Image 1 (spheres, rainbow, N blue to C red):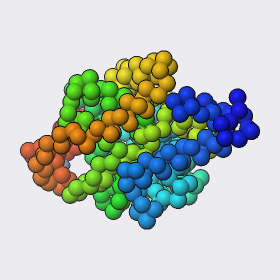
Image 2: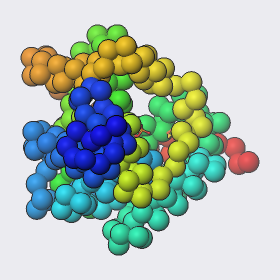
Image 3: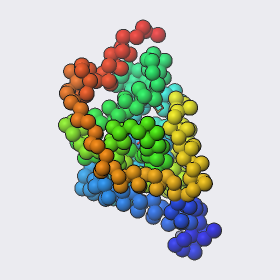
Image 4: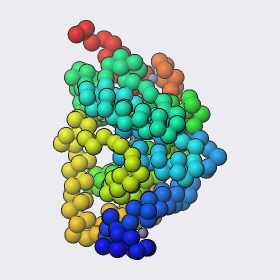
Length: 301
Ligand code: AMP
Ligand code: FES
Ligand code: ZN
Ligand code: ZN
């Protein structure tokens, strides 16, 4: 199989883009697509300092590499969630990446911030571990970005993630969530701008990109995500994509075109959390502080 652009052997076929790509042209396409998203949605400029939230997986470490190669100023943030072996290994991949490239990496640990890691939180609190985890991660990402004076917080959500989220939101016709699903969310008081430069890049492209660029990353999924609804939705979309290539990209791009016509999300009144001072819609302490207080009250092991 020959590359669409040169005489070299292609390593990846992208049916949705009608392309066959050699390593060199795959890297070029991935970086070009990320740059396209950054410009189209005015995510940030080369003068601005960006914080990339890295989980140790292919998407976020790939994103950090892409931004660095494109000449953006990007530091990393790793949140050590305290998930047995998984957190230790994913942290090593992030630290190795940062060290090898001489890039600054912030590390914050739930054990220090909340007084307990996610395994303990999951065993103590009712509700989905992933829901607690998501709330704690969002809080810490925002706080570090805000306190560090970063212009934007970038995450590694890719096309497969965004299409699955869109399918979930559409199945419920959740207009609030649909209105908030966008590749860039503006900054607010003590709220960092949130950006997703990989929205147009598929998981397969990110795997290939990391392989070609020699980026080592954790393959395993978080043990708490087993059976998660998002994985089920991704599987359904993969089957649709097999039968009809470009289903995902068409679904997402068509949504982004109609997005401006959606009703604006409800204005929520935010106040400062009396405990930590960060913004919250809750009456009383924010969700992060409530989890921290709840964990502090648990019976000692
Ligand atoms: P997930 O919510 O696990 O699908 O991850 C979505 C994005 O959140 C990743 O691409 C990362 O940018 C970020 N992220 C997830 N886990 C972490 C973590 N432990 N530390 C920092 N960023 C993370
Ligand atoms: Fe948060 Fe798995 S990464 S529950
Ligand atoms: Zn080529
Ligand atoms: Zn708080």
